[in-house]
Length: 455
Image (cartoon, rainbow, N blue to C red; front, side):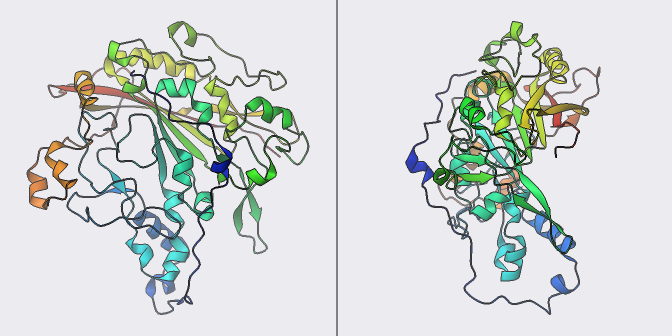
């Protein structure tokens, strides 16, 4: 693993006082569209499904709309070039970020939202809700904006958009996970949503105003300021009230953490795989065998600031945590050994209201899934580290504004779209892997909030 200097910096008071983007207020009366079949024939549930499918991230052919100037919606989010800088050419096959689901830049096409005020009112928050908001720590696509700064990314959203964020995805190098994890949420407050029954009996969500740890204070200060009562957690002294209202607030329900083959310590030197979320600092092989008991919240040292497995208390809104582990096939046994240990990992998440009892994320063995896919060799990945362009060379002209036609696209040699193939235990390496390619082994495992009534 190449060393990287952390891009995190201490949060200053000026950062907290950044003016929030306003929510959109229509300047003209809304037309009810009483004659439109979309609203008169289709129920809201069906319309919502149509909206969601239309507003998801998708890959776009490189000749389509690549040089249109970026526009911003009233909430401040780039809407015609989301996460890109003007090109949709495919990624190089030996780029660190080329993998299943990430073979080219993605964008959200929002022409639907420009149709009429009623559609905008019904669907404008869906992009924030249905999208998986992805961050790279590090070695992400160079064109991605704010790819390693959740605060800068979410600051471009209005408060209403922020409140709809449900799904996060972190690509993390092992060194970052073990050394800088507690800094991720600088300037952001993770709050829980609680369900509220309306007068009409329709269940709605509202933000729980009880503040949680947000990453700008040591957790020891958070624990010291915590008041045990039936009202839940407070931060009465840790963060001034005026500053808390200026923090970005999100309530993600799911988090996926991906550790790619190139994210493990010293992958370039064929270093053995090792991972222990409750060990302080870098994990080597002799550390991962140690089993740690459930942490005791009454101990002054809980949780260890450097043990990343104890840091999910900064995300009390989580309901599911999924890890995606990846390595080359020759290290499959090493990864399987980590997975067997991971089944026993228990991550502290939040306190049960009014008690000193911790609620944990526990592994769901039924969620365990293994896959393989074929990509660039390790030597090609090492060579790709020295290439500045994220894109297939044939399409580099898109950046400079040259025309790229559909016919030219079809004639170009581009990497085959990577696809995950289910792997059965004991199956062995795939036969017929093309020469000059590498087979990768990927395992998914999900942790869920342990069962039991929290109230």
